[in-house]
Length: 171
Image (cartoon, rainbow, N blue to C red; front, top):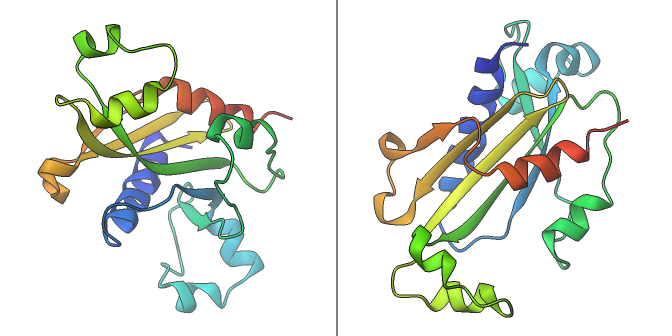
């Protein structure tokens, strides 16, 4: 699989999340090979607006509507595992980012509340995807620059989150 296929899927997920606006709950997606999905369910191409002849390494994100985020994210991810047909997983969530100097001042308890109220906080949406082969892709959109042309992409914008997602793919 090319790194581009994962990057494309993560950007697609971030754009999808952006289309519904801000102040949303996290969303989890299984990433499945588009070719295999369409072989198993040919009618999905029309239903989902998919290319009926996708690139060999294309991935289709499948949102997991039955997942609730009522417990801490790390606890939820620690209980998950995916069947072999799922070659990757992605999560999109909103977060608060602080400058490095502010992070060094963070209290050990109630840090989330402290960060949410910090005057130098920046709100962002991050989409993180991982593949079973170890590849990673991330997309980050700042709330104050809410535009498709201002989305930052890289492999490791959220390494701890990527590690937690990758652990759900282990056999």
